[in-house]
Length: 160
Image (cartoon, rainbow, N blue to C red; front, side):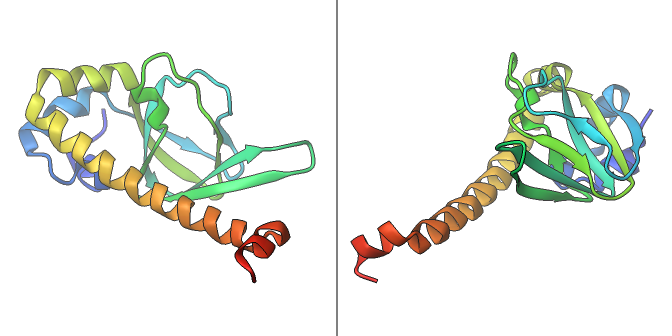
């Protein structure tokens, strides 16, 4: 079983009380991964929600056999595998360890079950998820707009 102290170090769990964390501990497990080990692949059924205890995870998409795009990285204390919180979903990227990693994980449906049972805990977690995902969306939107404005056809339209 994963300790409350480990779970407290995860950004998503910061607002939870010890009583709430005690409910989460029994459904959490921990696994070690080696550098370059794949945690999940694009298209895999999204069954588990992950929290990075130690290391660094790269989220990548293979556009073609020759092109792999890095969507971002996950640092210690952050979560990934959000698709598992939408029952029936699949992963939209690869999650690959860029360093040796220690990962906490739980079945997404079981985690959602806890959040449905304890609405206060559910609100705290979903509020944190919204803030994290908004930050990621803002970053990706900024990156997209920056790339688009450098495209020659767009530059002509903008008079640059």
